[in-house]
Structures are given as C-alpha cells and as structure tokens.
Image (cartoon, rainbow, N blue to C red; front, side, top):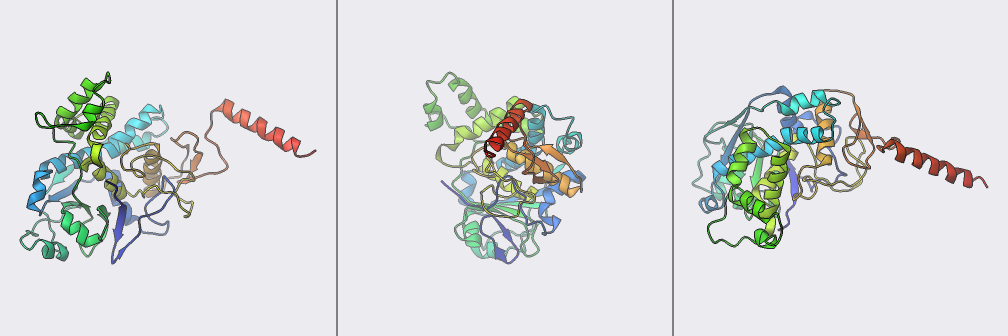
Length: 352
C-alpha cells in the first residue's frame, strides 16, 4: 500500500515537499521552530509525548503501549542509530561534537492523557472521545477516520502547527504491527519466501521474538548487529505494505526537520544535488547516508556551526555549511587523480 508523506502547516496543507535528498524541511527563510525535535536533542530536554487511540476497533491492530515502544525505538534510531553509522564509517573523531549530542540518552516522559481540546474535528469525528489531558511536546494520534477527515486522501502525516495544539503525528490504519509475534499456525508470507534460505531460522527467531528486540533497542545498549536485525525484522513484516514502525520513523524525520526525499527544482541551500536513498525517500528503507548528512547539517545549522565534510553517500560531493559543493568531489585519491588526468587529456584534445 502506497502512501503520501506530507507536512501540514497552519491554515494550509502543503503538497508533499519535492526536494532533492537530503533536504531540510523548510525553506531557508522559515523559522527554526520547524526543527523543534532537533533542538530538543541539542538542549537535552525531557521530551514529553502522549498517545491517543479514539477508535475502539483500532486497538485490536496495535495498542498504545506498543506504539509507545515503537516511538521510543524510532527516536533511538534517529540518534544512536545515526551515531552507529558514523562509527561504521570510522569518522567518530571527525564528528565528536555531533556524537556527543546523538549518543547522550534522551529523557522521555509519556503522559497518561492527551490535551486534544484544540482538535474540534476530532470531537466531531468521535463525539465520545476524552480530550482532557496535559499538553505534550508531541502527540501520536492513531485515528484513521480523523486523519482522513483532517487531510483528505493523505494516509499518515506530521503536523507542526495547528491552532494551539502540540505537534502531532496522525496515523492511519492498514499498517503491519512488527511488535506483534505471529500466532501459532499463522501464515507469514515473508517467512515462507525464505524457507529455503540458510538464514530462515534467524528470520523466524526475529519475528517470534520481536518484542524483546524492541525493548533492547528502546532501553538498552544499541549495537550495529541489533540495528541490522531491527531493519531486517521490519522488512519481514512489510509483506503487505508499510509497518507502523517505519511510518513512525519517517514522520519523526519531519519532526527533526528533514523533508521527503524527492527530486525537484528547489533552492540548493541545505539540500543535496543528487537523488539518494533511505527512509525519507521510500519509507521502506532504513535510515541511510542521506539521513546522516541531513542530521549533521541540521544540528550544525541550529548551533550556527560552520563545517565542511565529505558526504556519507558514495559519489556525493563535499557538503560545505549545509550545502553540497559542486566544485568538490568526494572521491578516493587515486580515483580523483585518474579523473583529473582524463579531464586534462580531453582538454588537450579539444585544442587540436
């Protein structure tokens, strides 16, 4: 099932942002408030969140506790998960300041009830819903009918500013719950497809013990192997579309300040020049080199730091103060020398 990833702003629903990956969410002149989650991790503030599931029938597909664990894991992937990718590239010393931000535990506090008093359409859709509660930093509302009424044909989305509400993620239905182990005898297409594969047993263990993996990632030490297992687990559950988890990770990317990764003509500042990959583009893929580039430039931008660094994406050029520099090539020394020799030969040939 395909979906549209979109951002809603006050009194106006923008079309899905068409931007070259990586890209910052807002136009350059927009206020820094749209990067509120990135600011939170810089300041190491406690992040309060609340979960509301007003449709009784939706509670059968995923519970509030499961969504809370997914949200915690998704936040961990956006912080420690990106730090793991910097470690993997052997560049932790180059980005010591960024690593200090990403690896420090984020304090999370779940509120027992959500302040939804400024959501009149929610009350109209669900007359019996309880809107009284405390105002959180971010709300997660799993309400397909409300999401559809709010945005039309957009399945799930992140809303930054709406009336006097907290930023919220609106989740539609129809996603797979990768936290729910299959019941005994339940047909699981992804496992059937890998039955002849040597890794089938490990995949089966991942699926049947998924809650344990989520708990480990949300609250314990996060290793590279766990990260790989996590996204392998997510892929196994994606036999019929997206999972709740990858939708949450994607929408949290918008809360941090990253745009959807589509190629289009837009200002080059705070955006790359070439198509990329990763969760902010397809939704199915893990966080990739695009998101690493984007998060580093976001954190630098919020702290007014100037930095030039080679992109984490192979073949992409240097990024100078948040913008890809078309004059600098991120190539190994020998390849760069070969490129320059070829260029010189072509220039000499043009003289005759």
